[in-house]
Image 1 (cartoon, rainbow, N blue to C red):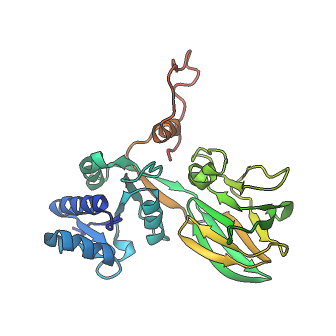
Image 2 (cartoon, rainbow, N blue to C red):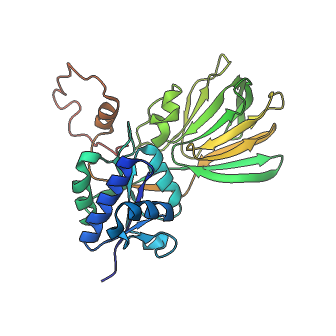
Image 3 (cartoon, one colour):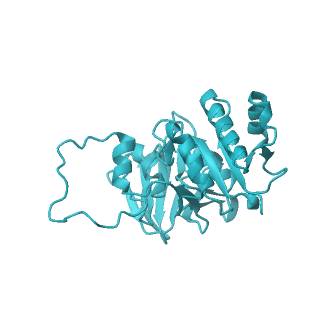
Length: 313
């Protein structure tokens, strides 16, 4: 029988996350499955629970292609880190929320044992989320390439300076203005930075890209939603007093000099999320944001019941 390997990703610098990681590793070992962590998390886990020395290290004893599943213990930031860690691999991510909102997580800390049991039984569905391919050009030279699950953001590098940009959609200029930055987002990221900037919430069953200006000084600088085959570009204009900076998922960054051009399009490589509770995205919005629904009496004459629920975020 082929040995099963499940990667456990957590923020072991936090006591709650470390305790959860130790708990999950114990459950996996008891079930005959090999838990895998990165080198630093392995050291923290074994220092806390020496009996877990059988936990293996990713990249040393186990390769990405050997992984069956990733169990992520933490908030959305930890899930984004896990997605970066296994980028290019088809292994799905199963999130357990130990943070605040935890929009990408599938279960909560109180459900940890049940979540591990479902993972061991392979009792989950897998859905794919579109990601962004991000390229930075200076003159005709490509100087940086990366990707994003939530968003790519062009921002001003200095607090006291305004960023001057011109926005392009599908090879045509749309508008130029001064701003604090521009967020280019996936539907998955529409409930993250783009949401905080006043962008629309886009159901994850829709393939689309969003562009949301940050504090724009312009009469026309509204959020935009385009199809998945469109291409955004943001150019840092020469009249900018200072420089800009590119952030992708708040994790990967690149300095943008005057004249830099950031091109964002759909990536052919999605992120795969394991789902335990498929259901209406509306319910997830209400639950995660604690939205008031008092007074709702439900659909009448089947005016909303029985329709496809689509994917959840």
